[in-house]
Length: 114
Image (cartoon, rainbow, N blue to C red; front, side, top):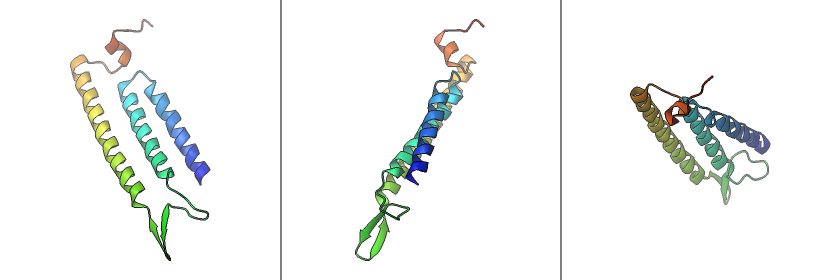
């Protein structure tokens, strides 16, 4: 299970990096959003898994409790990621309305002569 989780995290980081290195502003925001999902999976993978356990459990006598700290941190990270994505989308929308451009090279003044 941990190997599959690590492969998924690696794939998300790869796709996020690919999207961030693009020139289109919408793709950059999507890449940042994918990074937040990879970060959430990294936080979830930090839970302590014992042998034969599929989720992070706290043993208290004969009872097992799910660790609420990881759930609270991931929920907070999801809310913050959603807020940042919404803010960046509004920022891109406003930039497009003012400049009529959605590529970062044109906004920098480095127009491509192809």
